[in-house]
Length: 191
Image 1 (cartoon, rainbow, N blue to C red):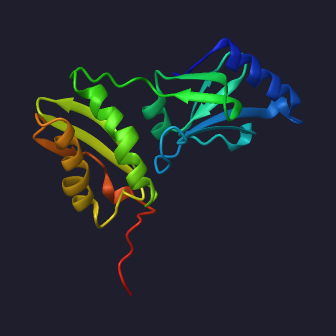
Image 2: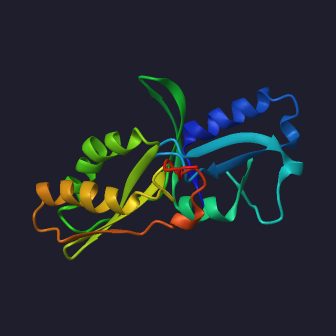
């Protein structure tokens, strides 16, 4: 399922020992698809009684971990580490790496990270690169972009134009987002 680093295991066990009812706690790992990467993954101790019938339970390395089916689908094969960064110490959950074989992938990812995501972030949205095949780029939009009434304009006149300007060989940018499940779109119809 998820692989916890030795450092992450030590930190979880230490935190669990400090919990008042640590023997009856499990670590819930969850994905919030509406949050932008890398803030979409969370972990928290919850009472074991909160485990739902659909949750899968596994051993994280001396502690119990539960995960719901949707989160499992996104995180299976990923890793958890404990890191110290400029913002302080904390857990870092990395989903499994999507392997994009097209050599233009890194340039497109850099453009998304440095230019496109800062622009759509002002509307509470974000863009994820899913794949590059032939001359097509596949993206998933999230946050305020998921379910937004202006998504086609953003995709064709914003994202696609920016990518084609940098990488002219790209002929099309396709949206693979499930917009019907968006619950917090930026766009709100007039009253």
